[in-house]
Length: 233
Image 1: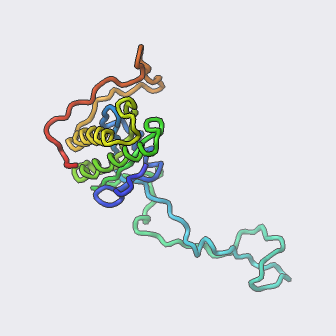
Image 2: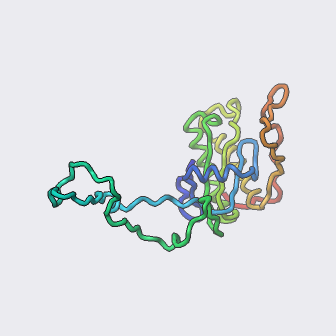
Image 3: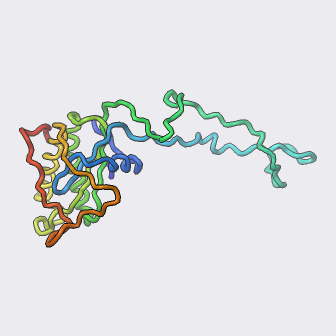
């Protein structure tokens, strides 16, 4: 679920599970027979800052009671139940922390950067070598199209497995070319700003199961690409 070698401009990587949840909560922007694309305007959530090592390792200061020996010896007697008289640890405040954060924890600010996240479930690619192959093709195509994509967070997830009868090998040139061609067409549409019209499911409704042979599978073909390739790959 990472972008590996795409952690440098123009395409960053999404690493926090909370960011994946945010992006996947949005409706699908585009889809193909095997992949779906989600997009969210904004930037990844800020990472939590850890306490400085000097502050974390600072022992609690306890005032010695009457008659107790003074010095640096450890206190083994019963500790006082009063509040500690140790000085407060003051952490340095960054420039970006001068204002109170948004209560929801999500502060959307304009950005011209792009981040990529990958979701390749084991149920759609049981072999690790297959998942690696699919991820590499997503990264390759996304990196080629990154400068022309809208800024924000992009997540590409595999939504269905490749037919094992057509691609019996866990990793082959045929599977690589098939995945790359499908992803290229998908990202070309994303660059052109296209969106699939997907009717939202009513809240609480059960997933569509279909009838007869092949139920539950999406039989609708991917929309044809318009015009020439929008980005090189």
